[in-house]
Length: 400
Image (cartoon, rainbow, N blue to C red; front, side):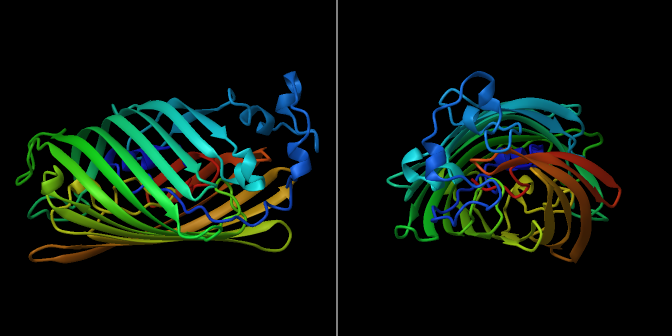
């Protein structure tokens, strides 16, 4: 989970980033640092012992987080190039489903609340909950967000000479999302779901003179159900070491439901992890997104890669691929190398254009909560003209 407006930007749009995975029966947790049912029966540690693992004596928050009053305080360090430097704080509450055995720790119920602000005036607050019911077959997600995001958008308006010409908008937003997933059969990796998104967004231009053909302000309401098909065999939702996650989603926003405009959006995401020799895990993420005519400019798909500014590369169609290698080289410590590329295609009345971008970087991880399989760390990423630093909780492709 990258604690950046990248995820929060999608939250403001209340579409792309608030996703729920299927309730598959996971394979056993990673061999390194795995725990057993006997471990779960051990007396609860007290005092200072709550912060150290009895197995290796290392700093560990598993015992603290599994306590009903325990939570993970997360500093939000914003270095997203699209909004500038900033920060905030969030609290993540993990509730292991102890009746589910090991799966209850690898796929716990999660609640979070937080707020952030950046140097360019972007600010927001959010809260959400993802829980499982009925032996894990029923999954619910609820979330809400409000705030203001100041961003540059590219390729907007009629007659713009270049897709590199930016238009500066301020988006005041408030929205909510609700989702229900149902596992097709016990222990099945397949699930179907329905997500409903409502958002009220007020875009305002932040520059003078006003670009020709663009409205200074046009309040937009989004009321959109989304059909979802998911496949999930990950061994852990936080820092997977094996398995596949895939989601197919189709959003349809309709005036009859209260939207300002009718539009559709399709997205396909596939992620996979495979352990290799000597503590190395290979991860791959691919995605494709398409949006119809009438899609609000801030909801058009954009390339989502570490190091690439949010919304910088938008199009009617967007595809990207990112590869990551993670090497657990000493105890709880891992090194990370990653790289990828993305492409966009934009079509107008009298033109068709594509854009391509690549990025890459490195980072490190520390296994902060062994029972949950939760790593934290830092990534440094680079794309043409941009360098960014990310605080990572879990993994950069996090899906609860």
